Amino acid sequence: MLKVNAVLHTDGSGYWTTLKNAVRVIGLELAYVDETAQFGELRVYFDEHTWDINHHGLIYTDKGFNRELKQLLADMGINSKPEYSEQGMQGEDFVSFDVGTQFISEFTSLAVPA
Image (cartoon, rainbow, N blue to C red; front, side, top):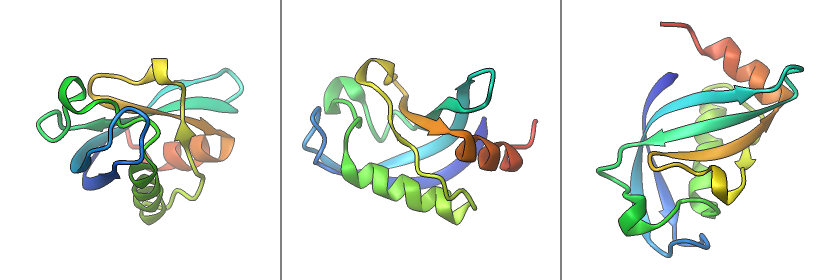
């Protein structure tokens, strides 16, 4: 996992919440990559003290969070744009995104094993 310390904001446009809130992002992980490295899952881990899915709902589909995530990634040198994966892949402490070949390549060049 690539540790990060960033604050992203929901804008209340998601299907599962209307809350506008600051969310502390603490890590990024390629949780799955297929055999050909053409498809994968990016997990964006957040501090549960800043977002509790049982109280606030899922961040999934929130346009503001996605927009700010893309800017965070661009600032890190990742220009590929992840998109939300399906609702059933969302976690208690992470937001799940689908990523492709370019993202996988750019992310793995940044991630240094601990």
